[in-house]
Image 1 (cartoon, rainbow, N blue to C red):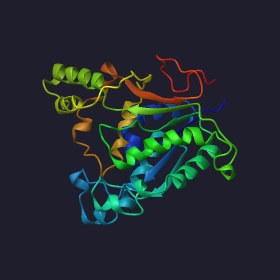
Image 2: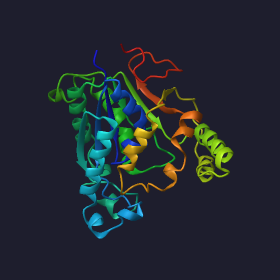
Image 3: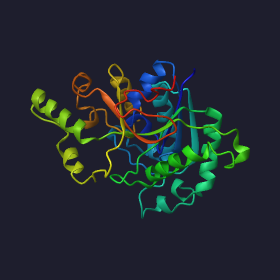
Image 4: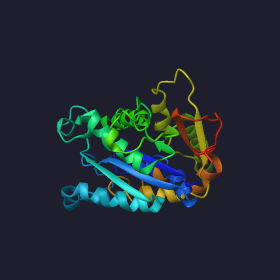
Length: 285
């Protein structure tokens, strides 16, 4: 049986900072991986000094689209679907008030687009976002909202009946990027090897993250051998990451020795899901 994963992300670069090692591994194993990106990332800052140039700023949407396609190719995505909405920026900004912004689109209009995509692609697993209380970017919040809605709507024959035959997504996951356990283990390993670590302030920020009332079901995927591929995908976003910055301060061999997993929270499931699974597709054949 052909396995299919659909990843829904807010901006170019999100697909490379959230689960890129897992997608790289799954694609290498023959899984059809489809990427849906909601916005063009037009409101993003240029975070790499080498790319902070007038011609890049003027054409930022086109540059970020090119970066996205490069990163998707590195990971092995079979198809990239651009929803075409504008980056919503942060609350209170001019970008956030733009009528073309993702956050300002009618929910049903976006949902119908996604239902059509899901019914055509027929994914077993969908990656969305969690509630993002820690980083409440409007586009991330909208991805969380839409991914949870499409899980139900795509399977409902009365919902957008002209959008194709109903399809039941088996599992909806959200990638976890900055978990306390991961940060603390990598921080300790960096200090032991180098005497310094880039993680101290990140760990401090986690003190403000609310603890879940009910421990989530987490699937941990071993990405040994695919960490660097995921990092190469992130490097492809040349406007968004400095190749000499702290994203890459931790050596790949140390990551694979200390914490070689990417973690995904189960948001919804139509099938049984083991609480200690190590495969997003476990039990699906």
